[in-house]
Length: 139
Image 1: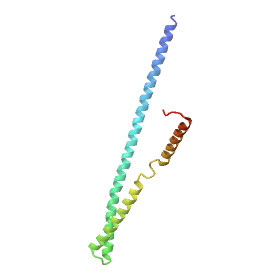
Image 2 (image 1 turned 60 degrees about the vertical axis):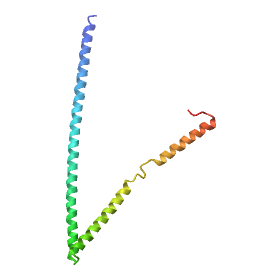
Image 3 (image 1 turned 60 degrees about the horizontal axis):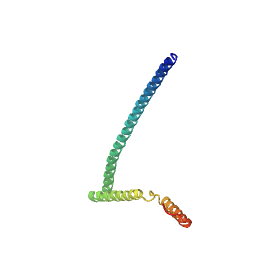
Image 4 (image 1 turned 120 degrees about the vertical axis):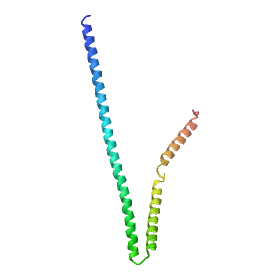
């Protein structure tokens, strides 16, 4: 039986090394996943900052363009107040059109699975009718 002792000991050592290696492997994978997630978050934040700066610059640009439109209308002989009123009304009408178009796009029409629900309802009614015809009781 003395030959069994060294075998058991070597088996324990082997199992210990396997468990230790698996533990190191899992820790390494978790570290890699954490590093990748951190890098992805940094890239996403950088992208959001660029989009925010672009939005601010575009608002400033639109303000300058509106001022230029007012100045162009005023240069044609129209008073500055009337030119500002015309440009303001045009921009408000454009904004209203965009809001209405956006609202229409956001309506939940087509999101709810009406056809699928009707099909399930028809299937349930057919099963119920089949059970009734065969004399089976409801469960």
